[in-house]
Image (cartoon, rainbow, N blue to C red):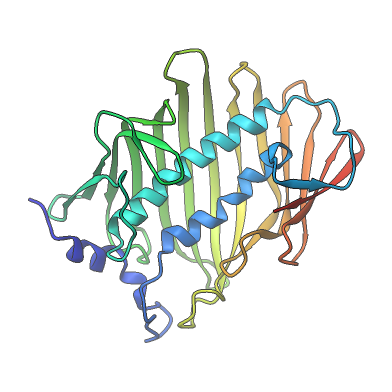
Length: 298
């Protein structure tokens, strides 16, 4: 049986009332979007590829960026699925010509959402092509401890790349410091539609809400991200990724403001990324083979 959109939004976004007191946001926050922002952490591995960056040292070292690029692509695709789900359940979400048909089932256990983009590519305003379906199951209110949200592609393609796997978000409840924490696990495979390449991607993250949970504001929310990842790039080279110092993400800032990441391709130099000490300026350093390069996003 299909439920109404408003009923699902009420259930799904129970976070409009914060758990530490009777503080109500004027507009329910897009919690998935806020958490989505934190996934920039893993994209740090691909910042060497950004064409919109200013480098203070040139030329760049002679490196193979394939692992960083493939990891970035996988993170982007699975984060985009999360964003599409968020838009689908947001009553105030913008609907575009590539918006999916959304079906809600609030009577099954677990409850489900289906996003159907159709069998032919549609083009989003940002130029991204999508077709196929995304399945979502959720066991309870997003802010309730123990709730599990699982997002699974179903014959789903993005920019003519076949997406397989899953992304699972689990509410871990408050940690020993009383901060709400979420586990995020991704297991994915990307395959070019023409079969020319395949890459795999795994990620395990913990996202901890350390500031802003007791206020009615959204922009004062701050998260710390820890965890690691691994994969095999399109050339068959295995790599690992580790957040070596927790990444600090402020909802009011479009950049990571603090923390370090290390990417280690097998048989290739280790790449270290350092986001600094807390300034919201989009600047970080990349260190490889003993050389450090300063990069500014923008």
